[in-house]
Image (cartoon, rainbow, N blue to C red):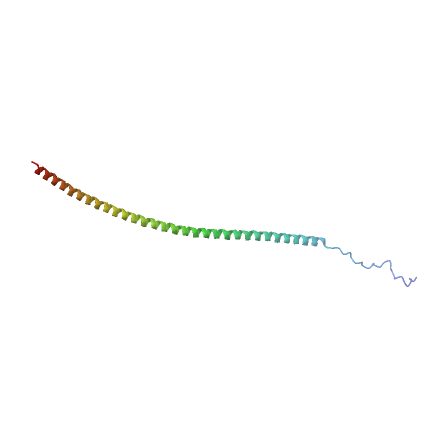
Length: 137
């Protein structure tokens, strides 16, 4: 028996030709990439927030340092003024003490002068009294 010419020999035993496999997407890798992108975006937002907070803190620190420096300058100025006032008070106190000593000396001189005048007047009164006692019979 011969086989018909258009039928391949032993077609019942031949292996069918491989058909191309159905193309399917790797959903696991896509999901993992999406999660990583979302995590990266979240970290970037968090980092920008931290940078903003850090900038605010630096600004506040700079302002506090400037205020502290101004306060120190004011304290130095006030300290200088207090020193000047203290020196003026000391000088005035010394002048007052000297004036008091001068006034005491002037008062003492005046008292001594008055005492001598009183002694002189007393002597004159005693002489006048003695002469008036001696002149009356």
